[in-house]
Image 1 (cartoon, rainbow, N blue to C red):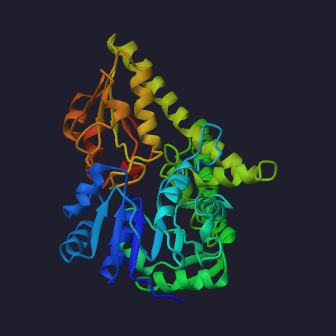
Image 2 (cartoon, rainbow, N blue to C red; image 1 turned 120 degrees about the vertical axis):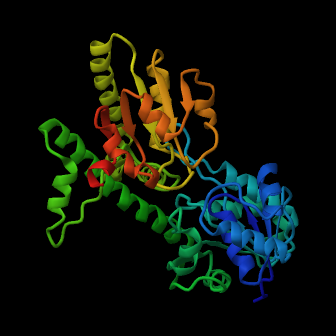
Image 3 (cartoon, one colour; image 1 turned 90 degrees about the horizontal axis):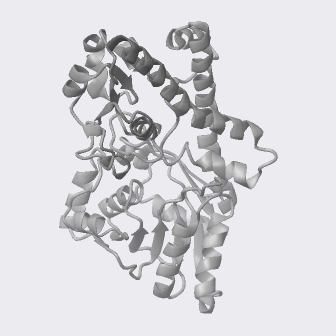
Length: 415
């Protein structure tokens, strides 16, 4: 078993860059690869292109020490970690094109004996497919000792640099030897338990973890719809029910976002369409919640128009998919803001997102949308729609009492 001294991390996004930084921090020479010139330039300047606590310090320290650098070209390395996006297509089938592109890009650099790890959350069989793509491009390496593994991340945005170290890790290998070699690499920084299995089980484990959470969120979101019909405060109801020693209901919201929970269950549904009935139902409930929120805004807008004779000003507070980060991937809040702009042509939509400096592309071309501060939004709005419970919004509850408020997170009730 050859030692690993250099690691190429392909994809310097929310998972790839922290992984690259933590490996460099623990003595590896890490060569980051990304298609974005902006990302490559940022990393080489010792900065980060997105918000993640503590990451900037890790990147700066290791770039200055010469252990971390970035390029748009895939280099030679002892090990490769592929951390590229795995979205789904319009029919919810997984899109493996990013994995295929990364595989083809690294293939010319292989000499034999390297370890290739897929970290991207993937459907069952994706690691095997990655190996097939590589060996199709390099049939001369079929018996050259290439090893393949799948090691899914299990970190929480906002705590990535902590949880990369402390969380347990699942490592699935194409062979036991491959799993043990990947374990050796992750052990350089992982203090949690490292659990070895095969690649398909590792792939499925990550999907199951997020599907479990999705099903539980769907239960809370469905409860919120029922409670709205029955005139019941859903947050009080959940608080009371959770006093049962074996009940722990999650909190409802405007939907489910992020690259993991909003996407991963569809990979299971695609793999077993006739049997994944509960998982499919949960996805449909959570995907439908934004439409219900829009319906609540429409009802409030009708009342404002009846009273004032003009189109209402709507404030949408939050665009990220969860509190206190700038990550907009699969965000129901962003989707709701886009729908508001499209459906309320005569209204002004005031968007507040304290963690971004400019409107995202999907909103930037909407003439009736402005990115404003929370103070400006609260002062001008007739309808205040709380979509994300950022800490920055917690103190606004008293100031919106004379507005029509739609609090999808229950933040102001809690505070």
